[in-house]
Length: 613
Image (cartoon, rainbow, N blue to C red; front, side):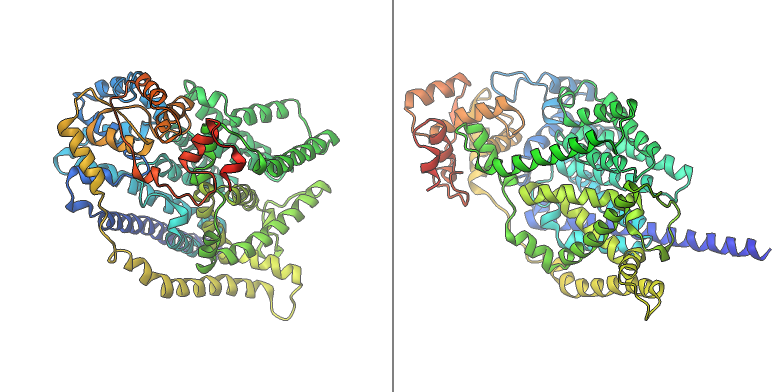
């Protein structure tokens, strides 16, 4: 009877913890969404502007996606609008494109469909519904990070700390502040949910029902992630490499790896019409993993070790050689000069350090990595892994979900050190992983086991530190950054672009309806959104044909004869070309990255060596 009462009390206590944790997770997500909504409205003075001025606030060419959302709502029916997008001949001059597949317009299709069937047009404007959908996904994003850190550490305090660090470092964790419709703002929340589900799925101490829930969530979010972002398969390829390493060193039950692979195959099966995925490295990894399992290739064989060593050697050589490769092709140099492919500056790491996340991240990563290496050594020595971990064991690196996140943060961290754009995939998980570490008693216990602490009971000290350290961090962050975050809502300059407003007003009133405009891709996206006019190119840098058309348009800034430029523009059926003073007088912090320099190199007027001096 007493045993029954104790078990009932323990169950009730656990239920209360889960309830309050879920409430805290949802509250953090909702508060973040409200904060973003307020910040967006005050930054762009959104509620006080006319429709044209609102649409211009969609920066970096992202307004093109909103144009198709408007098109779907203006169509007489959803089916008709969808059909028109699949045979779109009114966007790129002289071309008929399937805009749905070319631009990954599934978020706009789904949002416009929901807007129609819910009758939202009676009480909310289309633009607010669209903005609300994006900001709602950001709430899901931080909630998933909260849950992920909570699952790994066992305390929802870690989730709150992860969200706090995410919000404080918002300039390095998300691009939603200034370009809402970008594909990654739609996709990364689903990836965050997928990672959270994968984290729970890899855990040893979960029930069969929880495991099935994690599997279904992982499959659904993987499918959606692949659907809404054209670069998602590269992200999943890196994740697949992490799981491949776990499987290779026998750090996770083979059954779970098979289930993970099955979820990816299901996602691929539903995307069978997407030709891009057929040439994806992720597909090669999946096929290779299945074949390796079929032929029962063992990691311990010398050939496998030799292959891994050769792969590491080739990767190292490529990393060393790539920075010194010089090409004269405009498209290649144009892409390499994009900000997202530049090396991150010192200010990025300085911001992370000032927010205290980077020092603690290095501490947590060092402990988890060393413990993981110990686990790998024990597995290669033939020792079995424990499935039921106790706090006093002090082996944080034997937990499969922890090992996965060690590999995850190392792979994405390595890419973030090379490319500025990768920080948006790495920094959120730095916040989550660090919060887990400082709040996890198992991590502190691992350190004390290495130190062979005897003066104070290590278990007691681990529990104290796992509570005291995050509490101190939380209070310091609250004191220093809470006033700053709130001040962002009150001290905001008005966003206004009179030149673009004047240009669009002229196009609407003076230009012929069938006129075709040429210019920079970002400006053309704004023109397409605000006027509906046909353009010569789009800001879609994964399409080589559109990049070539952009190169032809940019020849107006090169040392080319007027006759040559005229032929290039008329071949694209151009009626008006827009010359931007910002490109004529461009100042680039990266040597040789001005549009004029890239064109001169490509045209052979200037050598690449000369342009860098």
